[in-house]
Length: 483
Image 1: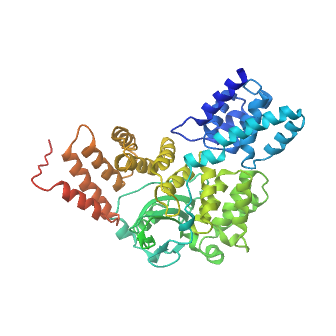
Image 2: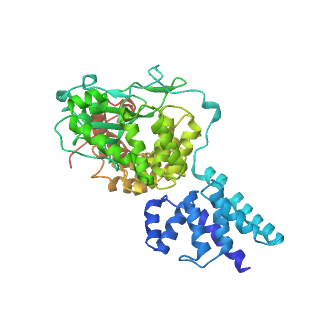
C-alpha cells in the first residue's frame, strides 16, 4: 500500500500544470553542485513537459538516492519515460534491471511502467502541450507575393538610407544574442537577423543571430522599415519567420578580405579553434560558424549535418537551430516542429516563443491559443518582451472565454511599461485594456489607439483594422480632455 501511494504521488506531481516551463541548464548546474533539492524541483518542472533528460536525471537520483530516498521502482518509471525518446542508455538500464528479477516480479514491474507511459508518457504530454500537425496541409507551401522564396541577403542599396531611417524612432525590440562575438571596428558590422514577417509584410520582431563589428542600430533601423513580400498560403495572408544577412554578412570571402581583413582574420582564427573543439558546446558553436559564415566550408550541407548530429545528442540550441532551418525552408515541417518542440522543453526562450507562434498561427498545425499562451507565458516570465505582447493579446482578445483574463493582462502591461521599446502593438493592447477593464477609461482607449495607429503607420504597418475599430468606437460625440 505504501508503495502504491508513492506511485500515485509521483503521478500527481508529474501531471501538475505549471505556468513556467523548464530551465534545464540552470537545473543541471544545481545537480553538478550537488544541490539536489533544487535539482529535483527543476527536473520535475521539465518532466511535466516530457523532457527526456529530466526523466533520466530523476531516474539516476532515485536509483542512487541522491537527495531523495533510494527507490528502484520510481527510478525504473523515470527510465521508462526517458526510453520513450530513445534517450541515452535508458532502455539498456531497464533491460539489465529486469533481467535480474524473477519472472513474476519482472511482469509486475513491466506492467507498472507501461501503465505510467500510457497515462503520463510521450503521447499524453504531446497532446497537452505540443502542436498537432495537420497532414493534409503539409503539401501546401507559403509563398511571398507569389514567389517561392524570400531574399536572404540585403544590400544597403536595397532599402532607404539614413535620412529616411531617421524618421523612425521606434525600436520594436533590441534582441539579445547569447552567441555573439564583438570586435572594435568602424566598418559595417557582420549582421544576421531572424525576423518575423507579418501578413502585411512588415517586420514585427527581430533577433540578432550574429553581430560582429559593434553597434548595428543604424543598419537595423533602416532594415525594419523595409517592406518584405507578403506571406500567404491558399490565398490567405499569414506570417512567417525568416533569416536575413546584412552589412558585411552579404560579402563573399574575397570581398570581406578586401573590405575588412581584420574581421575576416578574426572569423577564420575563431572558427579554426572551434573546429578542434571536442565539447558539445564548442561543436555547436562551430556548426553555427559554418551556418553564419558559409564561405568557411565547401560543403553547403555541413552545418546542417553537424546541427542534426548535435540535436540527436541533446544539445537544446542545436535542436532549435536545426528545426528552424527546416521550418524556414519549408522542408519536412513535422520534423522541424518536433525539434523546435524538443528544444522548448529545455527552457530555451527563443524556442518557447517560436513554438508559441507556431501554435498560435501556423497553417500547418491545429492552432491552439491555450497551448500558445502556456509557452508565451513561460517565455514572458523569463523577460521576453515579444512573448509578453503575444500573451497579453490572447488574454484580451481570445475567442475562448476561458482564456480571457483582463486583470492579468493589465498587470502584464504594467510589468512591461518601460520595456516595450515603443512597439505600436503595446499601445493597441493598452487601449483595449482601458476599454475592457472594470475601471473603464474611454479617453485612454482613444488616446492609446491613436498612438498605436500613428506609430504603426511610421513603421509601415497596416493599421486599417485599428483605424476601423477606433472609428466604430467613436461614432457620435466623444469628448477627450487633458484632465
